[in-house]
Length: 88
Image 1: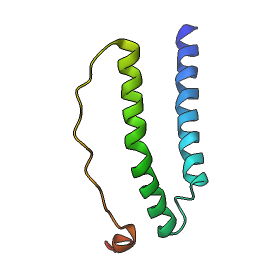
Image 2: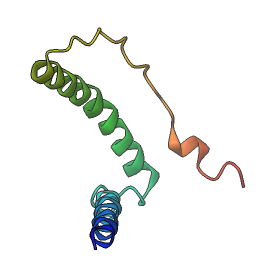
Image 3: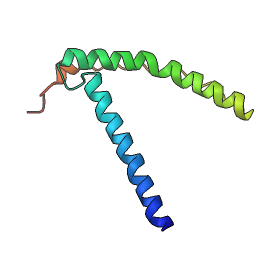
């Protein structure tokens, strides 16, 4: 009985993560034109590093661990428009 409940919980969690990913792609219009995709990639590049820093500070504060300062992430410039359908 416990194995079935655990299996059902795993399925529901995986399904909700997949559904959330599909919703995020639809909401951000990532499957639209390359301009929108490139803008979303730029926005993610601006938002993710500060969020990771805040999360690491929160973990340090809650656990008392000291995480050494990491180097700055590299700047990634990948123009989607230049490589769109380049392999065909």
